Image (tube, rainbow, N blue to C red; front, side, top):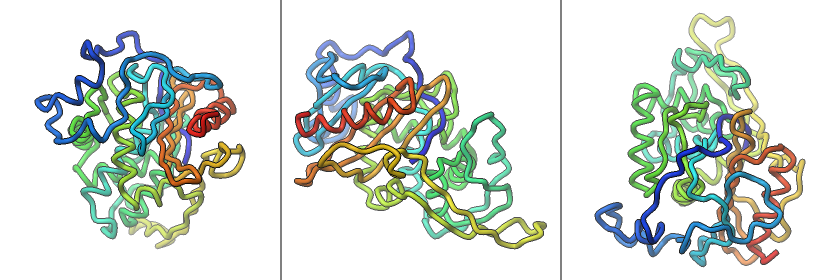
Length: 310
């Protein structure tokens, strides 16, 4: 997908888990109120490093969805900024609650002036479908698209953030907190590797999400504001995911089926991928705060390769 906003090197206040680890938490019906929740999850027995060779990042994990196993982990319960991987949750909520064919008008709040902000080159007053906005969200990692989606679903970004937090809690991601739909840095905007696994696992159930988040390039026609000189313009969005554009080779015998990147100077480089092996088994691999762009992809190749015992 693409690069954008905030991970972090990790917080000074890593959250406290129950004495017996996440297993106790997910088996507590009063805490999560989801029948059979624990039986569907990869649940580590303890918070300890596992199979970390070849991966350089502040936090990461590899999860086997079919075998319900954690194959690699490092700081999976440590709070980190999610950067533009935030948009995974934004996309999921829009797919669950929105009409993909609805015409959405880009609001004034989509004018984002933060230096280095990744945009879909939308202007207030532009109209396009929610489906097209989701491509603008996930392919070029458009913060302007995120704001437009938030306004369409909830009326404004703040109300949408409340919905994000409620949705995350429902999924068991109880140690995340979101302040906006795009991931631009905020001290109170954070997640963990394990929480992102829970969110991304749910998103992977949606075939439209898989399609959108695995798209390399997308072109659509945007209807411009009424006072614009040209009533329409064509835009083309291209993913900055180094695996998608074949700048970097992926792990042998593995195929990417969905993903999202993120980056800020404070965050480092972040990447969330869903993949399958040649037998069809599915995995989720997550890296937060890799220090160097090229190292992110080398580390992710090595991390995903651990599914084959490498």
